[in-house]
Image (cartoon, rainbow, N blue to C red; front, side, top):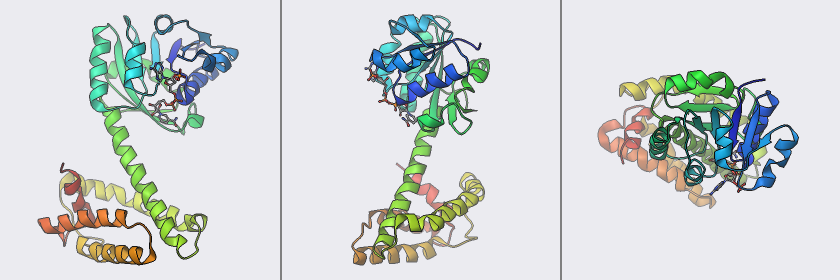
Length: 284
Ligand code: NDP
């Protein structure tokens, strides 16, 4: 049997976390506001605690996954002496740092985390979970946390998990909006989103291959136009907007993209490569 663990919050994600611990043989204590959500886990061997405090007392490692930080603060209201709290609830970096202090005042250790996966993937290496907080705490519980998926330690600052989560969300939204916008354009030509898939997936793969070089340019602040200038992109952007308008599809996304590129050109980057846009994203 593995290290005893407690899971607070048995929603879609919390239930999956507790299930993964049980499958791996960890003695697992659970608590949820709505007790019925524990039934299935109890049938699989979990211990149901009568209160958050009783659940916290049951194991050295306390994993929390709830709707938001207000709910987390409610259940962590009592003493936490010697407990390591791993909060996998999505939130902001500032809330994570404040909660880290609060947990420390109560005598506990705190790791913040983020789950970059859907509940079904939890418990497999496909699920990526990020963690931040004191390195010794992560090292002490790395193998237990490894039960949940592939762990990625980001650094001492408890806020780093939420910062990475924010960054990843804007990346995902950008890709999904781009795909859906493209599907809408193709829809005007009678092409289905499914038919667009091979080209769309290839394009995402191609762009992924550009990232190492683009990341280096973003870090160095040098944007050589090896593969096309911002001015060239601007010409294409204007065409996409005009054509979208005449096709009667939404042109908000290309308009936003063009406005960023125009500001980059106005700042002297018309002949630079696309990565020069990073400076516009660094502004308020
Ligand atoms: P659910 O809505 O399924 O579960 C929410 C949980 O929070 C439930 O256990 C609920 O209890 C509990 N809760 C809410 N308010 C309170 C409160 N005031 N006091 C006590 N308990 C409370 O959400 P998920 O499980 O899907 O999400 C949980 C976290 O995981 C979120 O931060 C989400 O962003 C993150 N996440 C989820 C993913 C997903 O695919 N689902 C993916 C990645 C991250 P009750 O059952 O009593 O309502």
